[in-house]
Image (cartoon, rainbow, N blue to C red; front, side, top):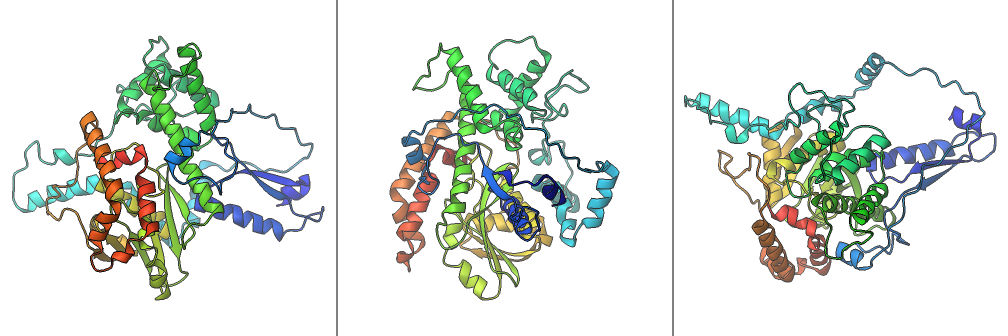
Length: 492
């Protein structure tokens, strides 16, 4: 505040954000400025800037159907060069940067009781299940063979030869699969990625090409793994990454872009990932200016992915509602207020891969979703909850409550679906291979069938109250599955 007064700032520019925690910070800053005292009389104006990939005119008029959005054929915007900021002739006492030890002391002293949960997130569901299986075998006096527990082994990807040091590495460590560094390093890594099929004598490029083979766990998954953090942190923008990718494709094809697809898998992976990132960002932005339904939609970023949720109520026990397969938090649209009115604070979440939460190209499993619930409780709710799950959501809630019992005050299962076999036989505890073309075809055919039969299928789940299968429910489910990204969930 003092610095703003000294420089007599009239405008403060900040990037447009969609994460609820960041939006809350910006709201607090704006409130503090409005209550501050400034020599010019008026507090600085806060202006938001963004770097959209698509040249759309209005967020309010933006379609929430990705297929319809793509059919409108918006042009893409060109990345701007980095601006040169003027030097301020104002002497400010900025102080000294704190040391690492000082930061550790500050974090320790400022830690709240809820923060003691943070270590819970460091233990994966897979490792807990492995330990439980081994312990059960020991208690039952069953001799352990070399293969026991093999299918639930925690797999840590080693993306480089042991002890190998590469000068000018683009990665923080040999085992890292995330490109680290400034804009120039990231752009060089992107160039190396796009030219994966071309030969190279550069050691750093060879290292990145090695990483691609580890990161490509599914067709097209490598780009998000390698560059997701760099784009999220703003090292390069989505539109700069898109521009570089399309320019490479044009150079490769004498300035021509084929309407039948891209010439290399890396270009396809990059374009798909960038456009997907942009689309879910737009959905999140639209929710801030246009409230759809009865509750304000909020977004939380989990492992780089945007997760949709809502919260209602200010006092009472915490309740977390988890929907079933193919649904979203809107499934509880008529339950949230009733539960809140009974004296509860209610959270409802849309799981990764459903509704308006992101649908990334990853391997989906019960363990992935259970860890999502764990982290949501720790990071967002920040206290034990009453877990309420419908259909497969009940199964996921049961897994989360069983693996991390300190996070659940109670467990309520509504028409729960999923495995109840004690030896966890249904849980895909081993790493799966790449999805075959046959499974992708089967998933697409299943989607076509489900889209045409959504109403009839839902009425089968509401035999005594078929009126609950209303148009908003059917439309939202059809909207959510009208995207190729939905196939990612159906493949598992």
